[in-house]
Image 1 (cartoon, helix red, strand yellow):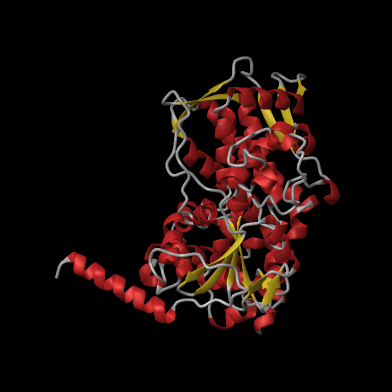
Image 2 (tube, rainbow, N blue to C red):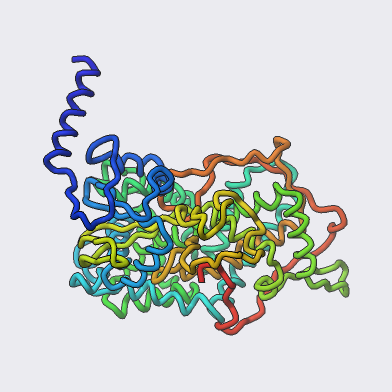
Length: 512
């Protein structure tokens, strides 16, 4: 039998199934977008292009909200800031909480009674997962944030110091990924950090890259064998971490997660397993943001000069010892580097790819216009909102590092910036990530010259297929050379954390 006959048969079968089982909409629902392959066309597009698929559809069809027919049911995609505000006003019926159950089951491997204890209360569960998530926020501002910053910056200091003796070109993405991974997770988990042992860090990044098939959840032990095995390996290490009581030496965030989970009926094993996909929250935003911000600054002579002028004013200099000591206090970053802060936020705006998911718990009339049916999945893709010209101007698709330093003549919606998600699921660690990236970039631009080994800054393309990443990681790498800046030799460099009250520890992020 020829291939053309087989393909024709498959096409006829798909068309027949679509005719009998295709999605039938209520006329009040958002318009249904066509797909080239009946039943599975949109799923194929998503698996190939990740969350960037939603941006492609938005550019092609221009609907402020639409419906996609997926094999598992309808998915609504919100493409307008106006409707995002309406979604957030209906938080009781359009909820993030069922997503937590999906994460616990598919990405953490929690099942049975342990899953029921975590599941949202609205569907008969114990609600422990929601309470664990909410317990983190108080520990990520004020003194809790300061303690994590101290641990994180001690690692950054060591890694950046080591570049003084780096005499060969190295892969910038690989180096940045390792530095931020260890600095971040040491601050979270403490001296017994699982990421620093037994190849856990490398295993996590392989798992993160291959997470899509775990989400699809069709016999994952076979269809997602690699990610499944990586998940189980990391779960074993995390369970050991908690059983040995290592969490007691961890951050206030880890202590809060563990104690809240236990108090609300979650088992030690379930809490440990939640920290497997929890790594994406710690690293999958911060690492690529640090990398792209660094590339954006060093590849632009004008921006680099401006950032250095700002940075020079931030360091205090002590010349009483055998060599000068330059110290950067993290509290000064909140108001002292507006250009770098703008470049950082613009990096996230142009590289954000995450689609904030919600489940429709009850039939809901959105904004008095669109009927959303119970049981549907709803997605709010950040990239679409970040390209909305009514919010960001005619150059919305372009990177402008000075964008957030300018007075915008058009009043921007508070929901237009989605790099850290949106209410009520705004990333609780956003201020920790901001301190880390700004300190990382500031110290590097002050101390070193960085040049591409190939002579020009030819950056790798983003990896659109990575659905776990909030910020698109690179698909490939670039080799760079690093040398100490002339006039800045024989200096000791330090970070300092001045303890700050909770109400003054936050940055003025566009998402807040």
